[in-house]
Length: 363
Ligand code: ADP
Image (cartoon, rainbow, N blue to C red):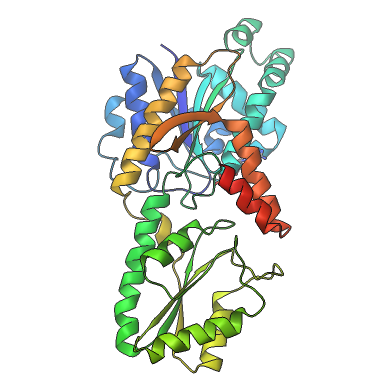
């Protein structure tokens, strides 16, 4: 059987554990050795005790746990070639040349780079006598499969990322809780939700919670938005509504690309309309708590498919990401998805909102 390593990297997300569990168990079921690589790329760079063989029971009882039992981290060393060289040596020392990377676009960009460099890393390791020529031959191909773990649902190529559904639940619960108290006191609440460049969480939770207004980066409001927002709120109050909910994505901007902040919106409303207006920034609760049913199954399905993809990998096959489209798990090319995701971020940064929407639409 093959030896495979699994790690979780970047921001954590509910559903990473179900994915780790599925990878370990499917791997063992198919006769492979499966290794945990702890703390993301840092564990790969550090080697030693950070890379440990997993057993069937080491993933018992984690299906319903949020976060990731093998730890996640951001790792500076891996961004530089010397770090990646050490990572390559550590993998070969453990006899591993199949890896599953569970992370966001940054982590998958790193995986893509690692794979591209693999030949030259091996050559350098042989030249500096850190590994034998025989081992260089034996491990000449590095097979990589990516799973997208991200509460933001910000990756091109998959309908859903692992963790996004659980984050939606968390946000919805929070808005539901706020709604009751807001109504008692006839208050207006600005709810700030995560998502960086991506307004998915904000948009979906706004629709699902009967919010009065939503700010998302992909669709900045026109120049008259302040008047429009105040009129809208006023109308709802005149019709008897006792509260207002405004959902704001953390990356919200106006049509000039200037940030729209929750504090700015609060100020506007309390100054103009004199409503008692409060800000709630949900923060890290959104990535906490247990995975939803959807994320447990998504992680499980994607993890299982990742192992199958590794088993079928050949020296010439390109790295893939396991995606979900139309409720089917499919393999999509990692490199193109990463490039497209970065292109969306670039378009947003340079205020080409239409381009960003088109790029997202195509995926
Ligand atoms: P996410 O995967 O959630 O988007 P980051 O962007 O922080 O999170 O990336 C996680 C880690 O992946 C980084 O700390 C770094 O170790 C690695 N990484 C990200 N981008 C690159 C890159 N361009 N080259 C090499 N490694 C990278």
